[in-house]
Length: 335
Picture 1 (cartoon, rainbow, N blue to C red):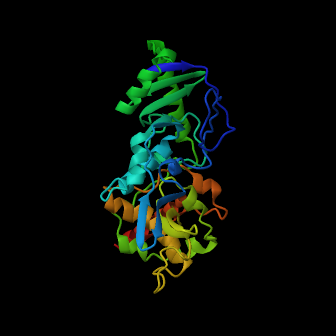
Picture 2: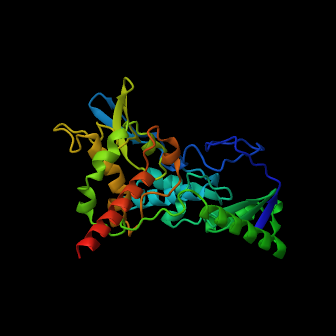
Picture 3: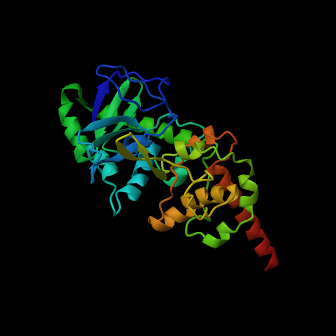
């Protein structure tokens, strides 16, 4: 493990963006937008096509072939990328996504000041012990640097001139810092959020629950939650003409929209309740069933903070927890 001295931090920048050489870096405790669009862009061209007389030519978009580094990724956002990996790196592999993942090195900034809207620990994330290719910790004015993967070791080797070996008392200082973060996490409003009843859940029981009828009513179908979510992976594919050629591109889409997956015969989910239910059933039931029990939520808290109607996955989880408790009491009383 190594340390870098005196790198500035503040709460001014809340978006991941390209930085120029020698620019001073600032970091927020929680980002306004996850870094998923670095690997899965909000809009990207897939290929171009044009016709010359009777011949049609198709040229795929060039794949990313330059190495890059993402600095300061939050632990919950890293988990979001790992969830996207399960979708886009499974067969058939998405070559556009895979190329970006191959060339990207992720430096994770472990949490030290989690927000009140955070609940990542409910999904098994230890934000003070994140990994990535490199993990860093801000402790006072020192940055501790820990390479984790071969990518991380390669970058560390190139930066050894500005790194110093950690001493024994530094390790003690860092461990104290981690413990302090753990204590903060225990005091957060959602620290006791439980997923009991969702693992190996009775699919039809959850699907047919009358709770959805009440939960969805305040939903505006604005799509804010899906566009800010680190794990949402839905997209649409469209073509547009440039006169003599056509470009095919894909762009993010939202299961909360009435025209999502709309086909000539119509749409299978015709009401907002059905669309609302689909979003949370996918995250808490369908995805875990397909991917070894891994939920499609990382507890980042963005939907808690940004939803204009105060609807979020925490409210859904709690509503069903109360229902399960009340049903349990009723069954016990009937014994």
